[in-house]
Length: 157
Image (tube, rainbow, N blue to C red; front, top):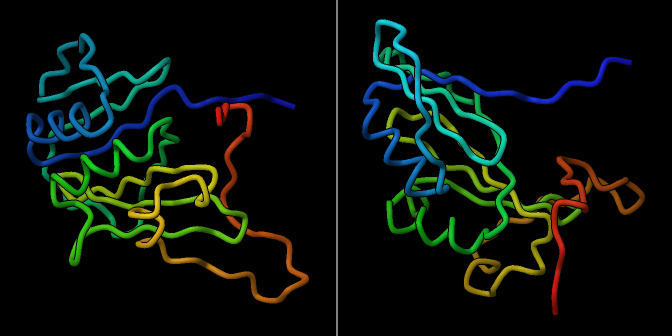
């Protein structure tokens, strides 16, 4: 069996600098040296992974997205609220039957970005009260949906 891991995700954007600011401010990504490809391009790093931004101006597909596991959901949530990408007409958050939280926002171009948390019950009430819960189809169903490796998180009481 071939083992794979993501090296990077590349997305089209219509305003490179506004989009760089979005990802560096919201998720603490860092701008990395980027080769000159003859068009506006930026590489952002987070850990050992990268997000590549390409200024093209094409409209993003409606449901295409990528997901990030965050180690501080509350901080990212607060930043997203401050930016206005979570609210009445923007973004949404839900918990799957297995407790995994999925929060969806859009960057300045409209690209959909999901940020995830492993357990809805560990979030503060001010956030938990805004989470829509997705129920299993029947009581015997296995919890469906995305999972997050438990080794990513260490909880301290």
